[in-house]
Image (cartoon, rainbow, N blue to C red; front, side, top):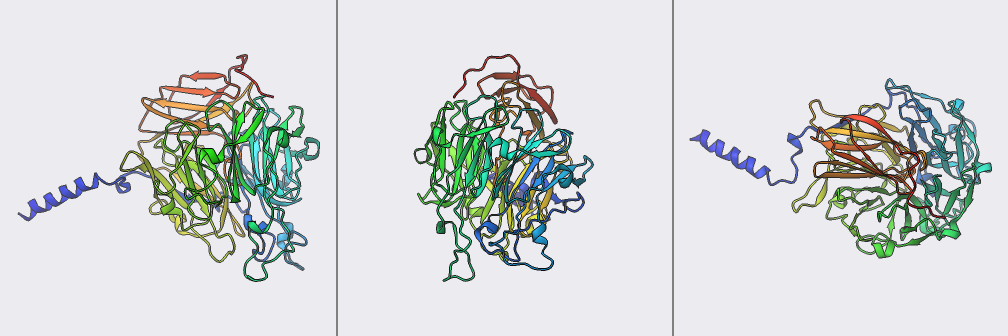
Length: 561
């Protein structure tokens, strides 16, 4: 009788579980392992001071994942702060913050990295470092670096021999305003990558909050600065077209990114502003931009209030074929679902992102599919904005089905690795496959301490497959930035767009990653290249990296000027 009763109870419990949205206990899910030390990553961020005393130091720095030497392995470029005369505390004697520099780590291909900063010539000690933008600006097949600073920005041209050359002055992109975010795009589809620079505050180091001695002035204490859009002439030089194309503003830009949100073949620009309305610049065929943020519903939060936006990320989290927008900020974050008609719906609360992350101050955040199930998950890099004493955990959010067919997120800190029980003050972060095993790893910059490299370890016996795609433009820009890639497996369709400067102060790895779930074959891959060329590719298998080159000699659908 007891046995029968127990069996009935077990059956009831099992049936009850079927009504849950997700049962991670019975799934094979990845874990992340901190391999910073064993990989030889010794980079330590400094804000140039003995304690965080102003908003420049609080903003932090970022990281770029790139293959600078074309050996097939992702390298890392870390941006650092520095000692600022007249801003930082006076320092005498042993002052290691005065020797702070950026750092380039070469991936040796065996799990270890080597610091090659000095031999590569990319220390960039001329300003307080903010963002790293990695892209091929001269279409020679080698990745260049653009660094934003509090101070002059820097453009490093890749010499194709393991070294770089500072070409900032000749190129005309040495903005001296306080630049924070930057993104690469070909806004006029002429085959050359342009640069959009998000400028932040007209910072005054002499100003202090005398009524709050333990805090420093926030962003509303300073006027905003105008952004810059530099058009690439294709001859090694750029021209400032900010006013001409209609993106002149005085926001407080922290995050900028470019993607084609309205699917018309022309890259648009989203600007995440601190303590102000965000901008969504719709591209009118490379001629002009117009701010559609208010009409589209992405200027403010769901409550209609301005947010303290940090970075931003584009991605199709609900797999409906268009790009949604994720905006980390100091409170609940914002997730805007693209409705496909030029408008977005704020789903921050209904997706459960607000419930999970509302207690954190979030800086870096990105969409990525960490478990290969074909649905974009989220990583948030968290840390307090005013003190080092209040450190925070980072967040891993898994994309799972909700009760009514919508997609929601669940907190995956439990069971995803010991790292998620540690605290830091994180800022920039990037994802990419650093060990070429097909899954996406994570690197995080933590202010005033060592950075973190997290290896994604898929569980043994996982049934999920994957595909990674490297794009090679011919008539389009060499990186294929702006290309839209669609992967179809039966009725399941995913889209990705190649971007650069696609996270707070950071650049994710260049390969497009597609989780395939249990699908062991792909029916079709379609690439829409910048300029309008449509290419259909018959795939040759899964669990591999493939390169898709744009067909040469195919006429474009149109160009803008």
